[in-house]
Image 1 (cartoon, rainbow, N blue to C red):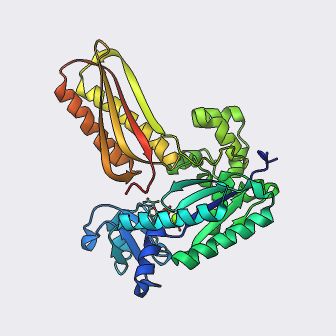
Image 2: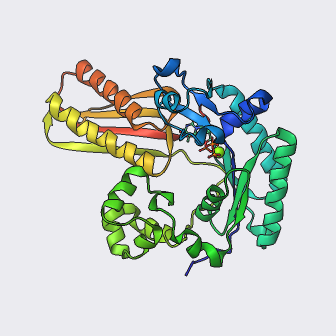
Amino acid sequence: MVEIVKNRIIIHLDMDYFFAQIEERENPRFKGKPVVVGADPMGGKGRGVISTCNYAARAFGLHSAMPISKAYALCPQAIYLPVNGDYYAQVSAHIMKLIRKKTGKAAMEQVSIDEAYVDVSFLKSFAKVQTLAQELRKEILGKEKLTCTCGVGPNKMIAKMACQAAKPNGWKVIKPAQCADFIERMDVEKIPGIGEKTAKILRESNLRTVADLRKISEHEMEDLFGSRGKTMYQRVRGMDEEEVVSEHPVKSIGKEYTFEQDTRDPEMLLRVFESLAAQVAQELEDEKLWFRTITVVCRFSGFETHTKSKTLASSSRAGEILRAEAVKLLLRFITQYPKPIRLIGVRVLIASPSGI
Ligand code: TTP
Ligand code: MG
């Protein structure tokens, strides 16, 4: 039975293949051809990844975050374009303004460069919200010449999953009574909070679908997901109590470790530190979050504590970048201070993907 918090009705709006669609809009000759926005493929030798690609390119197996060299091997005939970040951010601002204007007093939360939640509970009717979502899509298409997809549901999670299911250029409404059935047969990684690696671990225990996870007791969910166990227990039942918040408090994710004995053993420091960075990277992946600033903390013998930070040129979600930058900061500590180390830690500030 799905619990409905205060009879909420939420719209989740997400632009379709956003960066690539903007490029198509500017260059009508690209229409129908595979278009990839990202790093330079350099004839197959390029480093870096795809930011996004249109659905014609996705038909070749290409997707966001795929190494550009692999993309080139799969689809050399695609049109490869660099990331024109400032321009995409401008288009994003226009779209967010349109949504805000159209939804009036509703609380709106922009969660990435091309997606937002709107709490339209005050309309008190799924039929009215469906009409509003259709009008919104029409207005964005009319004014910006870009398509998007809308999901409507009784909470943020269901609204987002409805949107995903209706992509591209579609819409889907899931009413409270339909929530449990809607997600039942989905793969576990469709649930927010379950990333690729976690899904792999679950599959190894024969937990493949949401229905499989529903057989797990709340207590066992805590064994599987730690402090997130209760939330995940609710999520697989279609429940999510997260509110739409207009202003995001600054969030961060960090892990630290105190050594039993102060140490300067570089091997031990590095091993512990890399495991901390891997834990932070895992949480980022599971929650599909982006970061831009990395901070490393070192406490030396006698409680003297110092931090060093690095802000990347653009937001990232890559665990490898996090690890490499954090280790560089740690090495600077080791070379700068000759003292034994008592505690090390690494923290990232959650950023919006639009910090491009
Ligand atoms: P998404 O909304 O995840 O993807 P999309 O809009 O390209 O495609 P769709 O929603 O139709 O599935 O991300 C929005 C933009 O953020 C995307 O156009 C490019 C950027 N982005 C990256 O740069 N790297 C990434 O790994 C992802 C997922 C997105
Ligand atoms: Mg999108």
